Length: 45
Image 1 (cartoon, rainbow, N blue to C red):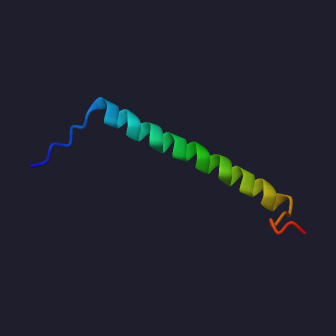
Image 2 (tube, helix red, strand yellow):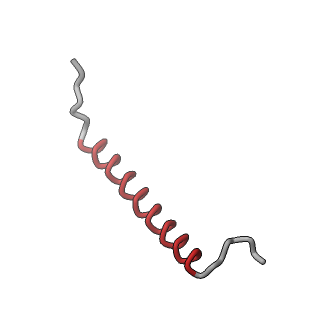
Image 3 (tube, helix red, strand yellow):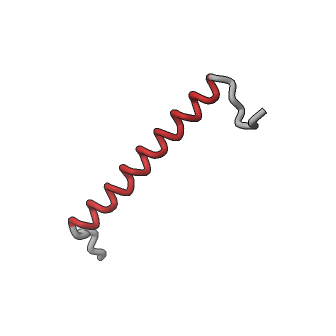
């Protein structure tokens, strides 16, 4: 039916994209949690 065997470079690129997205989302979530714990609502007041 379909050939699902992509090239190794496609697999590596997909892994790298997902890995970077995971690292960024973890860092952003951590900064958000820190700001919430400190009571900073981001309004600048």
